[in-house]
Length: 73
Image 1 (cartoon, rainbow, N blue to C red):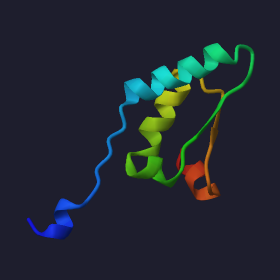
Image 2: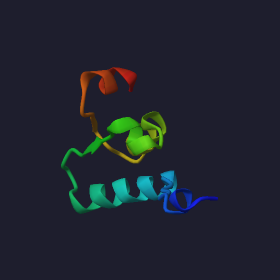
Image 3: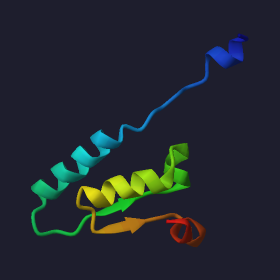
């Protein structure tokens, strides 16, 4: 492994945590509609799985950065 490869960052999306966060927001803003913004393919983690998790947890709306991303969802 070279020095550049060892400096790469890695992130993972925990869909259960995403659902829990959406539920927590819904509880704190009872009666309000919630929009989950899913852009850049879920920041490289898969927009569709992230969007599904948010909707399953109670997000009313999904937001995207571009029409192309919206159509993909």
